[in-house]
Image (cartoon, rainbow, N blue to C red; front, side, top):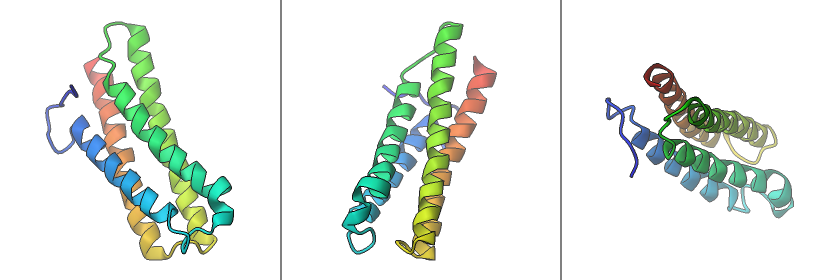
Length: 133
């Protein structure tokens, strides 16, 4: 069962929902050969898809750790940091996709918004954890 934080809007549950939205959009965009040609499948597309799926896994794994000692606290924080790093990498890939002409500005803005939603919720979660544990 996933734990909830005090404020429902900024809860850990919200980060899961936002991450699922990000996964859905990323798969829709990257599986479209009109946007990303097959020649990009093994370079850019696979990286983006792997990052977004791993991002969800890190968030889920971090949530499953309820720290009872310093080692568990650090393990949870490390998974949260990795999720933040993956958000930054995804932002780079979206920017690169825009520069290369695979996506337009409107798509890049929306995609960026989805990534930033996950990034900011994860960062807030980390901050709350630092105060709580």
